Amino acid sequence: MINICFAGLTGWTAPPILAAIDAADDLTLTSGVSRSAAGQGAVYATAAEALAAAPADVLIDFTSAAAVRVNAWAAVEAGVHVVIGTSGLTGDDLAELDRLARDRRVGVIAAGNFSVMAAVLRRAAALAARHLGHWEIIDYASDTKPDVPSGTARDLAETLAQVREPARALPLAELEGPVEARGAEIGGARVHSVRLPSFVVSTEVVFGGPGERLIMRHDPGLTPAPYVAGTLLAVRRVADAVGVRRGLDSLLFED
Image 1 (cartoon, one colour):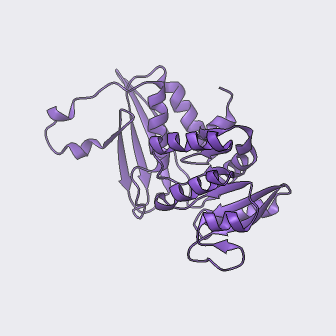
Image 2 (image 1 turned 60 degrees about the vertical axis):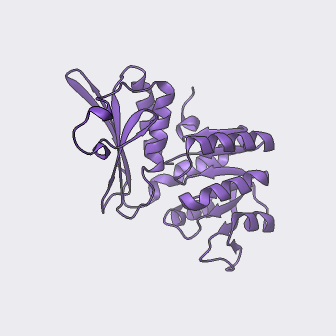
């Protein structure tokens, strides 16, 4: 039986994942983290309190960019494996967490998106980047999402940068008009964040070449259902390796 502490207990993503944990024979929820619901049963204001109060093998974090770093570090320090579905951690953050996780001999799986389809896009885009030298990323999300770009888009940009750095477009210094129109640079690629009602977290990568384009895009619906299967897969596999593994595709595909 895998004992789970869930951080972000009252969040948007939580209900279907908690229902799936409850229905699983090999998983059990032992504690939760939520500032707004702290004190209600086994719910605590901080991850450190929750992990000290009840046994946990894995911490699942679906909180916020402001909270995930504290939660993940507290879990790893306590020798608890971590599944991170929250945006906000940079490549440098994850490198630091990887060093700590290896020191504590625990596993961490961090995915900007736990949708299986999003993971397939990530892997397919990495394959395309081996052969195509020009790309840009468009990140769509709700107008209430504060972090830009989304963790999904940031993770995709950093993943493609590990394959190669995209060819440079016209240098910013040579542009006419506001350079912000070209988006932010992450991993050498231009990333453009669109924030409008009706979007959840859609991610698009556009590869361009002479006379042709290849566009890959993932569009989730308006519920968190796409993230359930991938989250539970990560919970069951996070203890298989020490250190940080990035992306659900690291579990779905043989390298």
